[in-house]
Image (cartoon, rainbow, N blue to C red; front, side, top):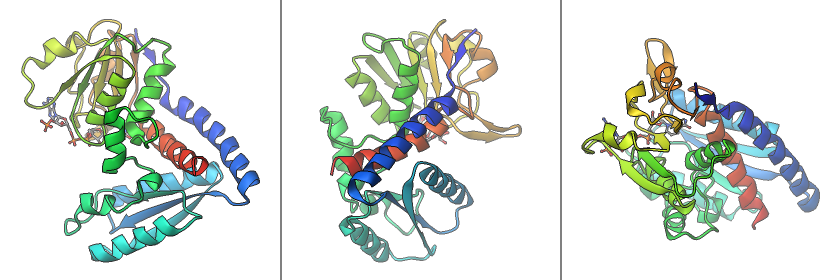
Length: 281
Ligand code: NDP
């Protein structure tokens, strides 16, 4: 029976350490660490995510500046706001909540954020630094949280076979790069992978970022493996992960629940990135 990795508890601990760092920053520089959060349009899920991020900022003594732009805002107006925030010395991190409305080119907008203020770590400069092994970039929040969860088990990553299912720019690819940087032997799988089960069965560390409810079943998991479930899917019973939790927990050594696993770590790492950015100025 697997040990449950309690992402909520680990995130709470990280946030209490961040509060201390944010207080120290304020005492030293006479201002609070600042995070600007931009939301465009009325996507209800985005509204919930932004609300949670702002609440988390408040709890960690980080000043949040919230910008809510109309659904029909022009790309140029959004870019202008980003340039203003880039130049604002009170702002240490900038986050543009995704997805943006269809008429806006997400990549072009994200490219305008000063890489030093890129709290989400999605800027090409920061993604590039991660892949080049340069340590001074900002790492995307979810992958950073995943590595913390794996490390919380106390099992060394070095030399292990890590299998990542999913190759998105925000989860799969960066987490694979981080596992490699931690000396794992890494295999990345995707929708065109042949014999997926054969590969997942050989994983000491299995990271699932697929977006398909309960896709990974007990017969696909090596006994004793560390299983990190990034998936956030809604089915008839509410929120569930990419892993069939009830079955897989009987086989795995460690497993993250959904909710209460990777999700809380993503927000905690956003705050970490913001405080790190402020301190390194
Ligand atoms: P994407 O849709 O961008 O990527 C999904 C990946 O899964 C793709 O690489 C795709 O392959 C692969 N895939 C799809 N079907 C299969 C299959 N049958 N076999 C193997 N691989 C498959 O998703 P994201 O990376 O953005 O998100 C993944 C999940 O994680 C979602 O549920 C999302 O909600 C959740 N998420 C959770 C976060 C959190 O904080 N907890 C943060 C971010 C995401 P291909 O490239 O070939 O299409």
